[in-house]
Image (cartoon, rainbow, N blue to C red; front, side):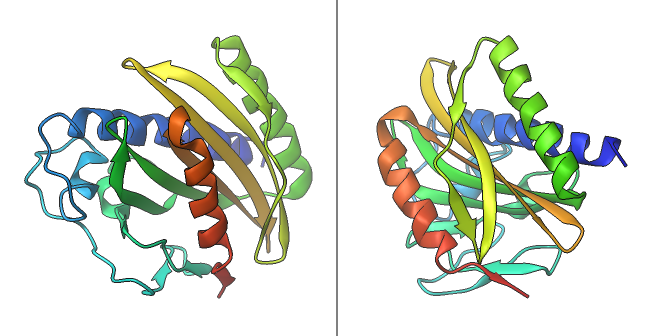
Amino acid sequence: MISRPSRAVSVGVLTCALVLTGCSQGSQGSPTGAASSPSSVSATTPGASASTTTAAGDEVQGRSGAFAVVPPEGWVEATDQAKGVANVDLVLLSSKKTDSFANNLVVISTDGDQSLLEDELAKGKEQMGAAGRTVSDAPGKTVAGVPAMGFTTTYEQQGLKVLARSYAVQRAGKVYLLTLSSSQSDSSHAMAELDELLSTWTWT
């Protein structure tokens, strides 16, 4: 049992890094627009087609079938582009870029309970701090009525100053890790977009 929540947090961190690397690489010469942005998640060919484009107000369901959200305007689903990463439930990516970086949200889900979740979040914070990243508590959030615990990490990657907020939620025997990543200069706007998205979150 202990290995599963541990893997949830570890995979969440790895997924965040994968998306960040893909976005920064994909920004070099990649045309701006919703159709091209999802291909940058896995740093594939700039001309690769989007996995799913969504119109304003379209609801998107996670792979687990346990929840659905309405992405903010200009965001697209890019879950299929996070190849080779276990337990990815949903990836959403903004078509707009700040400092050549597109805001993105990665949702990981796996089995786990609240006590193990708390332990693994603490370990995650320690690991990020040991890696030289600045770690602090994230402001509290609620995901469709369920309190979310989390922390904020700031660091520099490929010359870009990045801010990532990771929140964990436990519901019905499952742990959901939501990681919002943005450039530090766009962190307030990214949080506003996350709040907008969370206001539409429904458990199904």
